Structure formats: C-alpha cells, structure tokens
Amino acid sequence: MAVPKRRMSKSQGRKRRSHNAIKKVQLSYCVQCGTPAPSHVVCPNCGYYQGRTLVETEE
Amino acid sequence: MRGRKLGRNASHRKAMFRNMACSLICSVRVDDEDENRQKNPGRIVTTLPKAKELRPIVEKLITLAKKAQPHLVKAQEFATDAERNSSEWKTWRESEQWNKWNQAIAPAVTLRRRAFSKLRDKKAVDVLFDEIAEKFEDRPGGYTRVIKLAEVRLGDAGKQAFIEFVGENDRVKTKRQAPVVADDETEEEVAEETATDSEETAEATETESSEEKSTEES
Ligand SMILES: [Zn+2]
Image 1 (cartoon, each protein chain N blue to C red):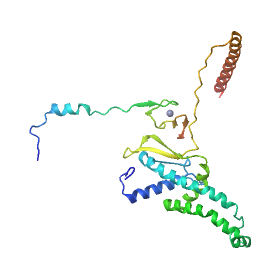
Image 2 (cartoon, rainbow over the protein chains, first blue to last red):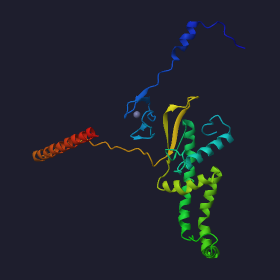
Image 3 (tube, each protein chain N blue to C red):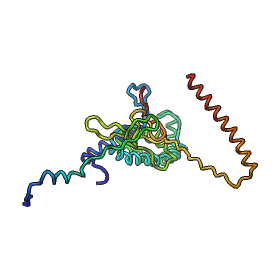
Image 4 (tube, chains in turn brown, blue):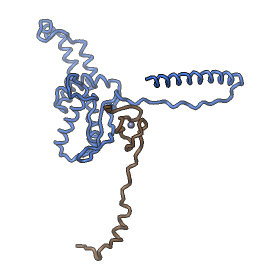
C-alpha cells in the first residue's frame, strides 16, 4: 500500500489550510425594525417578510 | 431515487410525508373551541428540506381534488335533498334519477378514494375536497409557499421553515411609478400644471400635518 515518504511539516499543512476559513454570514437588516438577520428569512423580531407581517409576535 | 432521502428509508419517508400532508391539510379547518388551536391556519412549521419535499406532494393532491369539482357540480343536478332512508329518499333511490346521479358522481368518488389511499385520513380528505379544492378552483398550480425562518432548531440547529397555502398573507405588489416625462408642452399647459401641482402639494402638507397631530394626540 502506498504510504507518505515524508512527514508533512506544520508549515505545509497550515499553508494548505490557509483557504479553508469559513466566512461570516452576511446579515441584512429588517426594513421595518432594523433587526439584523440572514437574508431571505422572516424577521425574528417582528415577523416581517417582503411587505407583510407573516409571524405575529406577542407583545 | 428522485428528491431527498432525508435520512429515512422508503417506508419511513412515505409515512412521514403522509403525516405531514394530513397535518397541513387539516390545519385549514380551525376548531375555535380548541385551546391549543394554531394561530395561523393552513400552515405548518418544519425543516426547510422537508417543507420543500412536501410541496409537490400536497400540490398533486390538490390537483386531484380539483378534478372532482366538475363531476360534483354535474351530479348535483340529479341529487336529492331528502334525508337518507326517508320515503322520499327511497323513491329517489329507486328512480332513474339515482342512476344518473350515480353515473355522474362516480369519477368524483374514484378521485376521493385515490386521495384517501395517499392520505389514509378521512378528515384530511374531507377538508381537501370540500374546502381547499374550492378555494383554488381558478388557480393553475402553485398552491403553497415555503418561507424560511430565522431561528434554527434548538438541539441540532436544523434550518426551520414553514409551508402554507397561498391566498392569505399574499405579497402586495407595489407598482413603480413611471417617470414623468415633461416635454413638448406649451407654456400655458405648463403653467396650469404647476398651479395644480402647487395646490396638490399644499393639500398633501395639510394632510401630513393633520396626521402628525393625530399621532401626537394618541
Ligand atoms: Zn423586523
């Protein structure tokens, strides 16, 4: 069976992983109340989505 | 296979979508006396992939139910209002009228049975044929919508969404106003227009200020 000839140095491994970072989620702000949330979701604060309130929140 | 497996075997998946379709369809009919009744009729909350997979299943059922509508209307012509097993009903049952009614309603019964074989729930079939089919009579498909929720499920961080019937909570389309092109106008017309414009703006400011007052009062 094929086996590695040399041990991977820390530097080589880290270089390979230099592109593996996860980016932060891009948040958008609710038009009605300004709460940050991922785009294309119902507002977690006021239930607003694309021109109408879809989830009634208790106040 | 077509679509998502959702970590289940075939029978598990079938049972799950049967349950989900029943829940969604039954959620249309709300019992007002029920304390645990849901706030939004015709809506269920699940994970996003499950909601997306449920959509075609429910929509096909609605198409099935809609096909029964013309047969029911046709059969109504030969139907009777008499109570079952009353003498009037018995004469109707023996008459040629019943034969015609039976012939007319047979396709609708077949469709009902097909829907029942998919749902295995009498209440859901009732709601599907009596309420939902009528509601979507004039709509050529696209009976449901899936909308994502911001909160993820506690425990496994599953992405949540809800699936609901369209007709309520529909998007209100706002028309963009066409840009006003002002050219090739005589001076008089322009003068007139500006006069009316100024009047309009005066009115607008008035209404605005009155609105402000009312908000202040409240
Ligand atoms: Zn909001």
